[in-house]
Amino acid sequence: IQLLRDPETFQEVRVLYRLVQFLDENATPATRLTTVQGISQDTQKMRNFLSLMVHYFRRKMFGQTSKEKKRTSIQIIREIHRVMDLASRNINPRLLMENLMLQL
Image 1 (cartoon, one colour):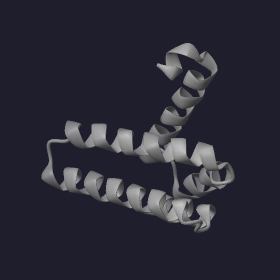
Image 2 (cartoon, helix red, strand yellow):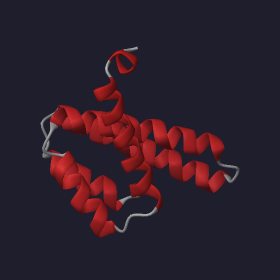
Image 3 (tube, helix red, strand yellow):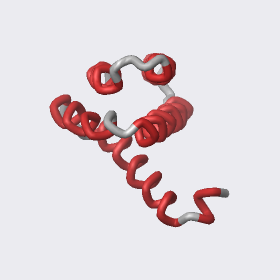
């Protein structure tokens, strides 16, 4: 509902979602690391980004037919949740995001 009321927020979420998709499907490891460097500097943006990553990989998991690909998506989702938990404990966000990107 908030997204429907605020087109600016909706646009930001859309851009982040497309970024998640790009990082998963097309980006090189160097591009991933450079991208998350900026995201990790803004706590709220990082939370939104991680939430969108969970959503993206859940949708991807349900669309997979191969059990191995589903397992990979599940492992990534678990890692994202671990990063969310560690970020709430004040661990270095840039380090957390870089490690996550290296696992994609």
